[in-house]
Amino acid sequence: MQIQTATDAMMCRGFSITFTGSARSWYWQLKPNSVGSFAELSKLFLTQFISGKKCQKPTTHLFTIKQEPKKSLKDFIARFNEEALQVEDYDDKIALSAMFSSLKEGKFTFSIGKNPPKTLAELVTRAQKYTNVEEFSNCRKNVQAVEPLTKGKRQKNEEPQSSTKKSNDCAPRDHRPSKKLKGRFRSYTPLNTSTEQILLDIRGQKLLNWHVYMKANANHQDKREYYRFHHDHGHNTSDCVNLEDEIETLIRKSHLR
Figure (spheres, rainbow, N blue to C red):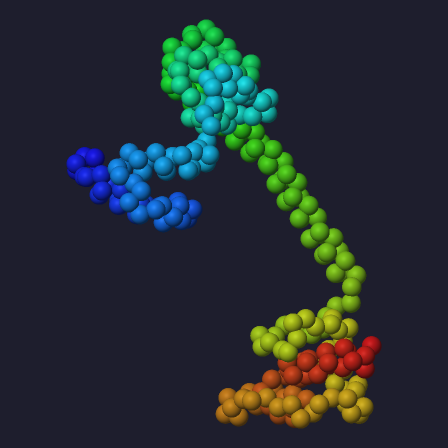
C-alpha cells in the first residue's frame, strides 16, 4: 500500500481486513473515531499483542549449542541455523566462532583446523561435502548389516520346507483327488481312504444327503463316467465335489473317525 501511495484511511481499512481470531475481536472493540492515522493504529496493535512476540536471543546463545556425540553433522548444521534465526543483532563472525567451537572432534574439525573458513557460509558449504560422505557411509553400513539378516532369513525359511516334507511323509495321505471345482469349505480334513470307499461304507447309515444333484447339461455329460452319489453320469464318484462336502460335514459333526 505504501508503494501505491495509499492514504492512511485506506491502509487502516486494508490492515483490518487481514485480522483473524483475537485480533479481529480486538479491532471491533475499538471505539469509533478513536484512531486518527495508520501509525496510531499500528501502535495500538503492537501494544495489545506485544506479549505474543518471540523474545530474541543474545548472540552468546549460539555458544550453548553443541553437537552431541551421536548426532550427525547434517542434523547439527540444521539445528544451528534454526537457532541463529532467533538471535538478536546476528554477527557472522561470532556465529562462525560459535559453530567451530560447538563441533565434535572428527575429520571435519581437523580439515577446517588446517584451513579455517573465513565466513559461516564457507564453513557450511564445506560441511555439506562431509555430510554427503557421512550419509554414504551410513548407507553402506546399513546394507552390510541387512545382508546377513536376509541370508539367515532365507535359510530359516528353507528349513521348514524340508521338515514339512519329512513330516508329511509320516502323516496320513489325503486320498482326496485334486479338483478344479470349489466346494463349500476352505479346508478339508485329510482322508486315509477314497471318497468312493467312504460312500460304500456308510451308504446304509442314512447319514448322507442324497438329494444333492449336479446342475449340468445332460447333453454335455460324459456317459463313460458314472458317479454313485448322484446316480448319474458326468464324472467319477471320486471326483464329486458334493460328496466331498457331505463327507467333510459328517467329519465335523463327529460322525466319521
